Amino acid sequence: MKPRPFDYVRPDTVDEVLELLAEYGDDARILAGGQSLVPMLNLRLIDAAVLIDVSRIAELAEIRDQPAAVEVGAAVTQNALLGWPQLAQRLPLVAAALPFVGHFQTRNKGTVCGSIAHADPSAELPLALAVHGGDVVLRSQARGERVLSVSQFQKGMLATAREPDELMTAVHFPALAGWGAAFREVARRHGDFAIVAVAGLVMGEWAHVGVGGLHGRPVVTPVRADVLRERPDDWFREWLDYFEGYDDLHASAAMRHAMCRKLIPEVVAEAQSCFG
Amino acid sequence: MLRMKREERRRIALTLNGKKLAAEAEPRMLLSDFLRHGLGATGTHVGCEHGVCGSCTVLVDGTAVRSCLTLAVQAEGREVRTVESLAAPDGALNPLQAAFRDHHALQCGFCTPGILMSFTDFLARNPRPSEAEIREVLSGHLCRCTGYANIVAAVKEVAGKS
Image 1 (tube, rainbow over the protein chains, first blue to last red):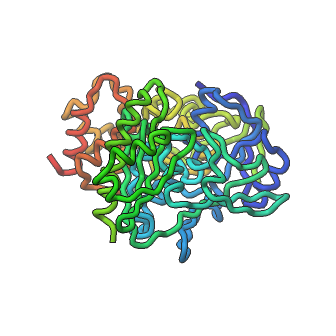
Image 2 (image 1 turned 90 degrees about the vertical axis):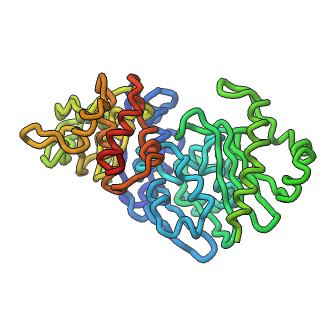
Image 3 (image 1 turned 180 degrees about the vertical axis):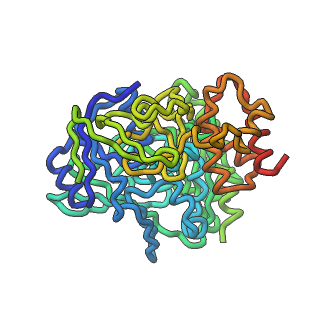
């Protein structure tokens, strides 16, 4: 289908974007890559009075390698980050997760920040940011800049703490030197949203495991690798409420739970094998 | 800063297959419709119109994107390449197209323009891909004649792998 009519604005600077957001608020939608927004507009699932196109703003298209974190700007595409030469070394979990985000063709246009702002509960990038313990940078004309942790930012299914006059200018992935990383998911077709996705970061016997596709937002929990190896039943019984999931067209809650039971130990073992 | 009202029509100029062309479009016009109806380049096919089937894939500044998930106004000033650019002026097929013909990699041909453009981008970046990489790129397309095995064989031949 074709989208309903909307106004289109293409500002040249972030300050102009903030001015427009202050003017339009809830009536405006930010268009960066458009790989989630435009399908929803075409299917007429949502309406927008005005689209603010930030895809040509040079100051938002930068990957900044800072000592403690890697900052990814709002117009950086998923394939641009995937092609960043330092990615595997600086953010191995993101390097492992990105090939699962959409398809080659949608990653050429889809942005890292856009996926996180869209906040689909089974999307890979919000999950990777959650396991990293990353931050989201929001800016408005009225209140300036604020930095939210990912758990403060992602409230639930497609719901975030972004105010209508705010632009997500960047996300920060903390660089975790020396941690092992692994990512796996089950999807009906490669590139589709995952039924269940599991991301793990491991340091020695300590792991941070994140699961997408079970709740309205990614679930992250610490776990000891030796406990998962030796007493997995005990651990899963304790966390059953977290990993039980829900029924939908693609999988029952029991099937989701079974996927977690298989994937979590695999991911932790794989991440442990590349630790160091 | 460019501002367009919803009913406003703007002259959108871009380079299509090496030629500078322009036509009018309102903000909501998709690049896929702009190419077909505005510029008359009907080689690009339109299938699902929500980014799943891949038949409308074109190159914008050299990278393969869904033209149904791109607004015409977003392509303003850009270099767009479609399937019409692949064959030589005398109609001779390029190596990728010839391999598709030789391997019977198209049946009804509806999905073919998008698949050719995806692999035009991909093989330019990665001239010797593995079969797994070829299949990953192909996962971004739907062929309802289910000719996938022959498509993989055709791309492998061009990539010097068969």
